[in-house]
Image (cartoon, rainbow, N blue to C red; front, side, top):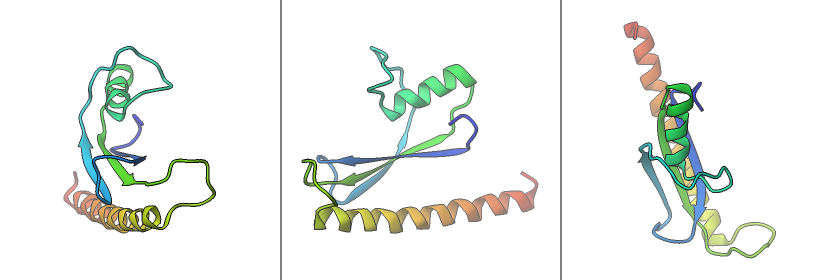
Length: 107
């Protein structure tokens, strides 16, 4: 994580999101510490503590509906995943364009 300028965590959720959400993450100390249950904000905080770098970090949450061990996604979840995918693909395009502009400016 410390070797990148932008990091995106992707997670399925069952509450608080209509189709999908994309939010910026700020570093936050987490306690008690366990690597089996860390939030993205805690991972970002730890990256800063260990490596002195905190990349621009986001959380892409996709709404899911069925949580039993089944094969495949529900139709609603699959629609949400495709909406999130198209959003994220456009976001990547914007970041790439912005990066190329900075290269030409000598940044």
